[in-house]
Image (cartoon, rainbow, N blue to C red; front, side, top):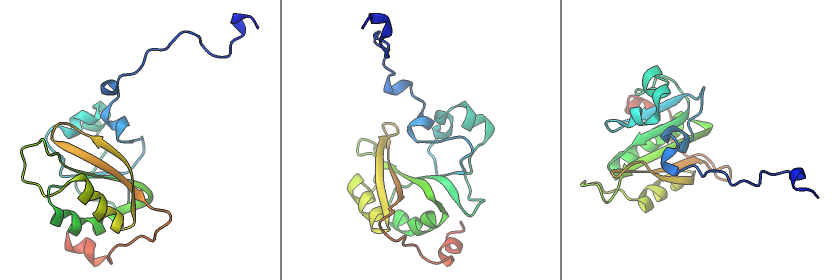
Length: 164
């Protein structure tokens, strides 16, 4: 077969560097998603990219009953345990929940780590699908509803309790 008949491009393509991919793409943000971001650190929204920072395509306070994408920045085990039922209640059945917690490298007094966040979330019927280092101070774990487990969340009074 002559070389011009190859179905693929024989020239090697330039590799896209991890750092060149926008943070919003790493996090799986897509257009037309209903997005809730709770307690983001300074500069996080700007790092998502121009579209999110300028157009306000997200909520910082829950205005809706259900979101496709929830990202919460949590620094203590007790807050995670108390907020998780409410976050799950607000998460669309096909949505994603990112839980970010301080890294060990960050100068913090957090009692959270990857194992503990995973255990707490999985005990509530969530399935971990991805982990990501946001920056030197924050690590994030992505969860979805586990299709093989029932969803465990408290009744609607949990939403009222936290004002969400």
